Amino acid sequence: MEMIDARAAASRKRARRRRGMGSSRLAAIAILLPPALILFSLFVILPLAESGYYAFFDWNGYGTPEDYVGLRNFEQIAGHSVFHTAMGNTLKIVAVSLLIQMPLALFLALLIYRKTPTNALFRLIFFVPYILAEVAAGLIWSFVFDGNYGVTASLARSMGQESFFILADRDWAFVAVMTVIVWKYFGFHMMIYIAALQGVPEDLIEAAKIEGAKRPQIVRYVQIPQIKPAIVVSAFFAIIGALQVFDVIIPLTNGGPSNQTHTIVTYLYSFGLTRLKIGFGSAVGVLLFLAAIVVALFYQRIFMKGTKP
Image (cartoon, rainbow, N blue to C red; front, side, top):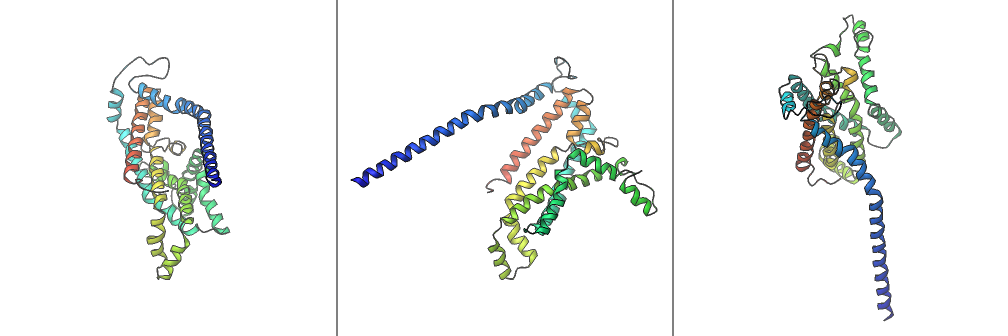
């Protein structure tokens, strides 16, 4: 009988504890959720709604938009050759990020993922470009590519060649831009892979070695399958990041020469904001937002379904 009473008391105590935890959670939600919702609404939802509204007006940003033009802004975007160039450049950045930047990051991660002082130094060196501000990185590389005083000019003169103005060449300017993008962001993906590789059980690697597997086979059949969720997430960041490239390009080329290095975001900035065509720029922003949403939804459904972190 005493045992039954003790069990009942313990059960009541657990129930009170659960009610107390539930009450504390509700209190935390009631305190923390409203400020977060207010900030999210002010800085995300409201600007998105306003952009969608302004996209149907010919508006310069001053006063109240009154010149309703319907879908004319979208029609102008569809017929603008520079926008087609910007879309092509954005797709090129996506391809370079997936086919060059990510494999490079994975290769380096496989070399330096183990915890040693030397590897820690290399991680720092490779990660520094990512923590460097985008504008600063663009300015540094604009000096490197400068045909008069930059590093490329010095190399050309040392080999007895004429200086080559890479950023002023229609064919090579965007190649230079993509080089800077790979240099700037590969360290971010490398750190994702390093964290994932450190979580691979050593027992699996040792078992593969006992079975006679060589280093390339261990990488292909043991390590890469084990870090597949990290690769999927890394690719998602690479694609979404490619859609948003802006800060690196402006100090490098500002979209030139002859509008050959624009991405969608720099196109929005150059042909919308700087020309005081806010309605036109808002229409570009709406298209970019829809593209990002579509990419995120399809990527999650196709590649991230069933992926465990």
